[in-house]
Amino acid sequence: MSDQYIAQTVETLMRRYPGEPEFHQAVNEVLESLAPVFEKNKEFEEAGILQRIVEPERQIIFSVPWVDDAGKVHVNRGLRVQYNSALGPYKGGIRFHPSVNASVIKFLGFEQIFKNSLTGLMLGGGKGGTDFDPKGKSDNEVMRFCQSFMAELYRHIDADTDVPAGDIGVGAREIGYMFGYYKKIKNIFHGVLTGKGLLYGGSLARKEATGFGCVYFCNEMLKDRQSGFENKKVVVSGSGNVAIYAAEKAMSLGAKVVAMSDSGGYIYDENGINLELLKKLKEVERKRISEYAKEVKNAKYAEGCAGIWTIPCDIALPCATQNELDGNAAQTLVKNGCIAVSEGANMPCTPEAVKVFLDAKISYGPGKAANAGGVATSGLEMSQNSQRLSWTFDEVDAKLHQIMINIHATARDTAKEYDTPGNLVNGANIAGFLKGARVMISHGV
Ligand code: NDP
Ligand code: 2IT
Image (tube, rainbow, N blue to C red; front, side, top):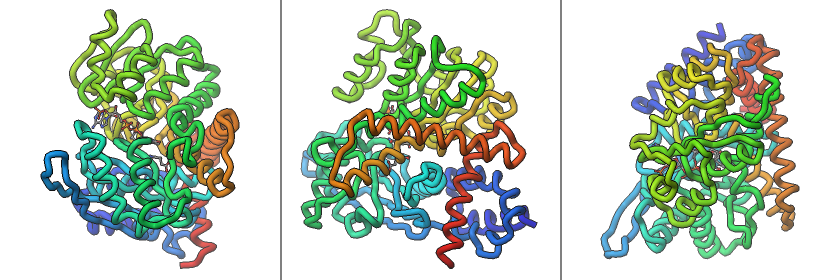
């Protein structure tokens, strides 16, 4: 009965949104976990919770015209999907990447509902983005783009309505330009964005939070198998915000990070990555990761980012982008002795890869649980902004750490309760869903 309800809901959604593979993938992955929940809670089907949660409450699509340094006019497409507001103001990042389209933003927004629910904070789910490519653009071009983006987005967001943050291609620089323009045209200085600079309301530890949180989560999974990061060999994909701070925390717990990547290729440094150098190349100079191998004699660079998973490791932290780790890569990791995978990125492992990890019974932390530390710390930034106070780095980090411990325990206990012990995919999906669904029932249709 509940199987039929789920199948019908999926079918209707696929018909309504054809040709959106990432969105379909994300929905299927969550719904595959939920049959026993609908079996146990008949009131969810009666209240139409599933049809309501898969359909975004609001989708905003707008044009973003801007002028480059040579005076040429360009037009990109901006999107904001305000997915579900049961648990609080819509909350989720903004992505600047040429691959952004409605499918990508809806998959990210849908994931965000469950992730934000798991944090235990009052956060609804949303996501935004644009197909603008910030690579190779001057600061002034990025500023003009951000201003044009905000010239439309400002109508739809507010500190108590929808609070965007960063994601791929959006860091402190872009948040600064967007915040400045919002303030200018709305004449309001409040916490409408998170990931802000520390001098104007940003939270200490927000920059580090997603990567640190991913490692805190992984550490909890390792503890359950009487293990830890000490002396482990770690591979981290990506070399952006999430990857850098996942690597930093793994190192501080005694691991050796031997490989990192960008969309062009990966570096392998068997002595352990020199993170200060990598930060300089990536965060300050915005260079390609291949430059690292030019500066470090023993390091090797290989073209193509997928090859990074062939490097033997104990722990893999995919922190770049969706579907970057497929079934073959997963089999290689398992064959090479990998015992844990914790997703810093959103949906980096394909469904085939996830199946390989679950079948092999290695520890697998799905992104909506393992990378929730970023948005959780955004929630802490919102709390600080509301209070007009700022907490110390250690205070925020301690709260983040506890939130990640709680998310892991919730996912693990829920998986056990629903007869799939060790399956944190089911645990995270079910626990994230239950809270939102119960609140949707309280609010009426
Ligand atoms: P950044 O833009 O800082 O870094 C992204 C990294 O991933 C870069 O190294 C980039 O390489 C690489 N990358 C991007 N696209 C591709 C691709 N198609 N193939 C291979 N590599 C790619 O982004 P973040 O670190 O913020 O985000 C990384 C992931 O983490 C995303 O999935 C994001 O949704 C997720 N996430 C981010 C959070 C945050 O707080 N920032 C919170 C939770 C999840 P290149 O420079 O060559 O493009
Ligand atoms: O995917 C994510 O959780 C983020 N990009 C962070 C969202 C946020 O609002 O901090």
